[in-house]
Length: 254
Image (cartoon, rainbow, N blue to C red):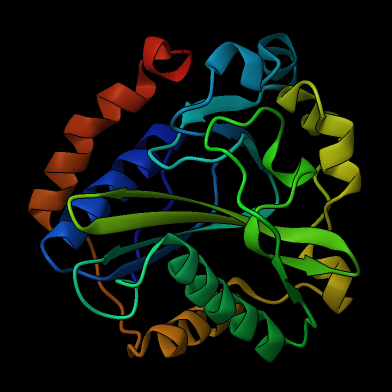
C-alpha cells in the first residue's frame, strides 16, 4: 500500500500512471487518497465537452482532470479514491477483465463489511468506455451498493500486461450544488448514490478505513499489505507526467 501525501488532481493522475508503468514490470501497488479540492475526473475516452458542465464547475470552484482509466465522469468530494496497479501476465488478475473487476470488488466489499457495512456486489453488465453521463448515475460490472444505491464505482485501463483500476468510494453527502458540475444526469447521480457514513451511521477514521480496505483487497489477491513510498525516480517521472494532466487541451480533448 502506497503512503504518499495527497496532491493536486494532476499529480494524483500522474502518480497513478507511474504505478501502471511499474506494474508492467511486475510491481503491485494499492494507493488510497483524498482530493485537495472537489474535482470532476473524466474517463480516458470520454468526450470532454459533453462529460461535464464547464460553467458550473467554474462557478462552484470544482476542478476538472482527465483520468488515465476509462469509465464515466466522477465527482470527487467527500470520498476516497483507490488506485490499484497490478501485473496481468501472471497471478490472480491474469484471468481477464471481468474476472479482475469481480476479484478487486470482492476485496473492497470484504474491507467494507469488516467495518460493518452490509454492501452488495452488483453484477450488472459493463458500460461502454465512452458512455455519457456521470458514473454514479449508472451501474457497471461488479460495483458496490447499499440499500439499492451505489456506494462505489470503478474504471480500469490495461496496457503492456498490466492494469490500473480506479475506484471512488463515497463517504458522506457532498454539497448538493457540487453535483451540477457533472452536467446532464447529475440529479440522477446524486439520487442513486449513498455514502459509507450513512450506511454505518458513523464516520470511520481514515486510518481504520485504509487498513480495512487494504486487508480486504490484499486477502482477495493473496497478498500481504505493507506500506511503501514513491522512489525518487518515480517522483521525477510523475513530475514529468503532471504537465500532461495540467494541460487544458488534454482535459477537453475528443
